Image 1 (cartoon, rainbow, N blue to C red):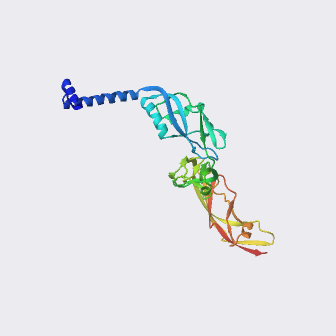
Image 2: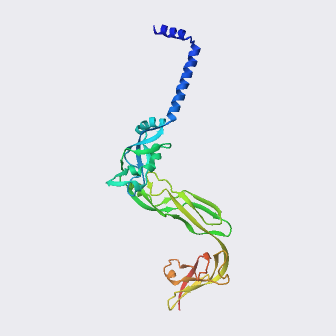
Length: 325
């Protein structure tokens, strides 16, 4: 019966099978064009999102243990309006809030007021959304308490310099310590945190930059990256062979040292400010000999000249023999 009606309708409209296929395709294309056009238009409507809060607060987890629903009247595309509720139910969005907008309620419960949410609209609903006003006035989140530990930052680096250039001191980081948050059993095994590798070659001037800290599974850091800096100086090297004296020998004692002369390499900042003919004094201290188990004493330098960056003594220690006078 239905088949006869269908055939009669086609006969009445003078449409054959091929024409019908073309007609249906055209109808589908027209509907798709209409739908795309209308979904691309902007409308004023209420959008819903489910939010998980992320932040960096001392003594608390970095991610909230719950999610909170937020509703706002916005101007957005039809597609955004249609998919808002679906996404809110299926995929909570994680928003990184500044600790300053999180107010403490009680225990591990914190809240955010609607007045602080405006700047986070694009994170909550995505780009292309213009906020009218928030319907939800307060969002509540729980951040469970976690253990924490302060550890030093250990720079990992490989640095080389142009000829006649050197680094002054070690590579420094700021901050040089960070706070780690996590379970006690994990934190107990950590006594430092490394940076990602820092590599610079053929340096001839000071450098500074940012470097990320290594990721440790199950641990959150108070900061994810630190500043680093290296002071670089051009130097002039002066090599001298000088005698070694003895200081602070008690009355009635004598300390004989061997060898009695050593080579010292002095590295001065360029341009040279010190008098290269002025000899600094090299010495050993009797107190070092008393505390030495091997009878060897480190050679030290006094009378440091202006502009001296560093020095190297060869050999670095001498044999000491005590004699009675």
